[in-house]
Length: 304
Ligand SMILES: [Zn+2]
Image (cartoon, rainbow, N blue to C red; front, top):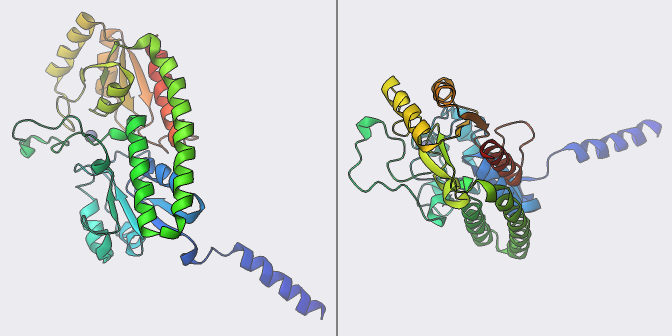
């Protein structure tokens, strides 16, 4: 009897440790940790969210490991950034997944770029042989909290369509996220008020949307074109421009090699400002607000 009681207790303990049945949560897969953070805010307990890339990675260049295709096989929703950010690695994974609903026009696919107004759209023909990584416009829009909110709203709408029973939950989660984000935006704008109009360089053209929101101004990028390494002549020209225009900071995401940015910052007398590339880009940055807290705080601090 004693043994049977112990076994029953053990069975209960083991059952408590087992993952919830798959039907309990909607399996959402995102391409980046920033999108995953937004999906968690909106989806709450009704979703199980996983990102294909890590925030410490350059999202343009993720290894298309076949293990990632396995994660997509039974995804109930795939959320990607779009604008060809993931063109080098997502299409082969989607094809290998044998999940027809997550194809670009599938009912279980949400491309976040469709929810926002895109900036840096090329006006002339784009020569891809030049290596430009932004041929369809700038894909780094989650650095603008207004656009992050638009993406979160699109995610809520999509989740409600796929899981109508959760509609009230998704709308409530979205409203709560909007409230917290709007309060944070007021705080960030207060931090930025003193540095509006100041000029920065960025390593890659990742800051377009952040600058559009914050009122800080781009004086150029270390890369002459998105994804193209800088020749020494370009760096020398940036140093001259920095001194002429009073550029005081060079921002660089943690995942980039910082040699060229360091050279420019040193010769121009500007500060090198390392920032997380995304949620998950540094230890302790687990939510969207924590990510933008770091970006705003460090840039505003360097320009004061
Ligand atoms: Zn880029």
